[in-house]
Length: 197
Image 1 (cartoon, rainbow, N blue to C red):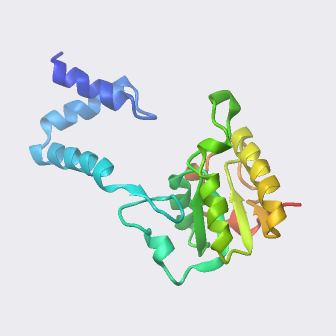
Image 2 (image 1 turned 180 degrees about the vertical axis):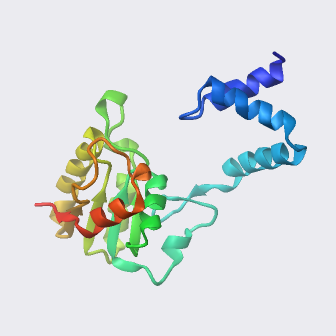
């Protein structure tokens, strides 16, 4: 196989959920397709790292600062939902049942992977809460060991602030990630969230 074809197959195969077989199908599709498709893909990939940044308020990915959510005056300022990843914001927004603000941690505490609290956007969360009007913090971390550890750590850190702390209801499957939960299950989990005591 020619080097450019092999190189692109290897690049696609590094994507999550894409094996060598699927990567090979992608490359041969692009070879047969109109050159414009490959050009659009290349341009989109280039723009991804040139134009995307983190919102200075919520740490979500955005192409403008502050992001659209943080700029929206119709959001409920008393609610702040803390999630692990930007994809979790997308999943919650798809439910249409949450109108508060977000804070994205960019990961979860995982000592086995060498990820501690200082590796997450927790410092930014605490700084934000000094001036925020939030009365309730919804800890929407994943229902797995890392998500539970992160939630427990944040509970201990935030409890002295006197805010209401809640966690998504346990209707979510254990070990699952928010981005893969169907919108109706996630909406129900948001509605049935429970206060952390």
